Amino acid sequence: MHEVLELAQRVFRERYGTSPAVYGVAPGRVEVLGNHTDYNGGFVMSAAIDRVTVVAVEPSRSAQCRVFATQKDAEAIFTLDNIQPTPHDRWADYVKGVVVELQKAGVPVEPFDAVVTGNVPIGAGVSSSASLEVATAMALLELHHASLPQWEVARLCRRAENEFVGMPCGILDQFSSVFGEQDSILFLDTRTEQHEAMPLPRGSFGLILIHSMAQHTLVSGDYATRHRECMEATAWFRDRLGPHVQLLRDVSWEEFQRLEAEIPEPLRRRARHVISENQRVLTGRDALHRGDVTQLGEMMYASHESSRVNYENSTPELDLLVHLAREHGALGARLTGAGWGGATINLVREEEMEDFARRVAEEYTRQTGIQPGVYRCHIAPGARSIREQGG
Ligand code: GLA
Image 1 (cartoon, rainbow, N blue to C red):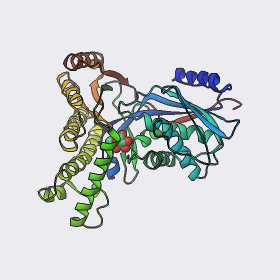
Image 2 (cartoon, rainbow, N blue to C red):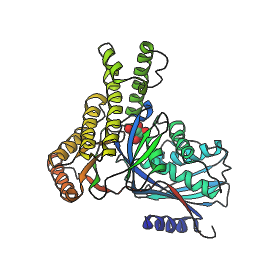
Image 3 (cartoon, rainbow, N blue to C red):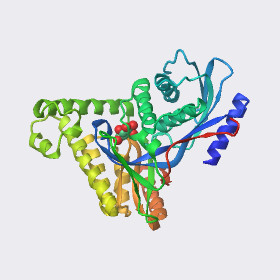
Image 4 (cartoon, rainbow, N blue to C red):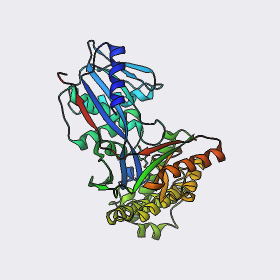
C-alpha cells in the first residue's frame, strides 16, 4: 500500500513538477456469491481486497485536466466544459465519467492534474474499473473539500459506468469498493440497499484468486446481451404475474418452476440462473452466520455450475480451474465477476492454502500451457482519501 502511494507521488513529481495534495485510495473486490444478480435487484456476497487503485490529485495551473495512468503509460487531457469519451483510451472514461457525475451532484470541480496507479490486476474480474472510479471520486471530493454519503459515492460511480462508459453494470463493484471491511465478507440486498459485514471465521479460511489468463470474447458486449435477456425475461414474467414484477428479484423460485415450461430459451436458463442464484446467496449468508463454511463452499460450487450451464458466461479454462479446485480440496470455487474469462475465487483452509495454490497452478499449466496468476486475497477495508499535511 505504501509503495503504491510512493509510486503515485514520485510519478506525479516527475510529470507535473509538484507533489500531489490529495490521494484517493480504493480497493478491488472479489465476488463470493451472486453472479449477475445485482442488476436484477438481487443479493450478493463480496469482499474488498488488499489491492488498490490510487489516484493522486493536485489543482491544475491551467484550464486543462491532465490524467496520467502508470499502468497504461498514457495521458488523457480534457477541459471540464466539454468532457467526451475517448474510444481508444477507455481507462480515461472511468475518470471522466466520475467527473461528469460529480459535476451533476453539484461538486464544483476545478481543473486538476492526476496520476493513476495501483496493484489491482486488470482483466482478472476483480473490478479494477470500479476501484478507479471510486478512487477518483474520493480524491476529487477531498480536493474540493466536499463530501458525500458513502451510498451516494457508490451510486454516482455506478452511474458513471452505466452512462458515460456505457456498461450496464449493477452496484456490486462500487458498493464493495466503498463499503469493504477488514476480514469481513459483505452481504448486500441490492433492492433495499440493506447490507452487513460478516466476519470470516478467524485465521481458519482464506480466499485465493486464480486468474485464468484467458479472455474469450469482448466481455462488455456479452454483458450487455445478458442484461437485455434478463430484462426480456422480466417482461415475460410481468405479463403473467403482474406489474409488481419489476426485476427478476420479484419472481420467486416457486413461480419460476410453475411457469418454467412455457418461457422460451434462452430466457428460461437466464432466469433460472438469476432466481436460483439469489437463493444460493441467502443460503450462503445464513451458513456464514452459523460459521458453516462447508455449506458456503457448496453454494460457491453450485453457483459456478449455474453460471456455466444457465448463464453461459464461463470458459473451459475457468471450468478447469474450478474442477482442479475441487480435486485439490477447496471448500468452494467459482468464477468471480462478469465471466467470459478472468478469474476464479477459491475458499481454502488456511493451512492448505500454499499447497493448494501451487498444485492447482501446476496442474492448470500442465493441461493448458498457460501460467495462471495466483493472488492470496487479504480482505481489506473500503475506500478512503488522504490529504497531505498543508495540502
Ligand atoms: C461485473 C459487474 C457487476 C456484476 C458482476 C457479475 O463485475 O460490474 O455489476 O454484475 O459483473 O455479478
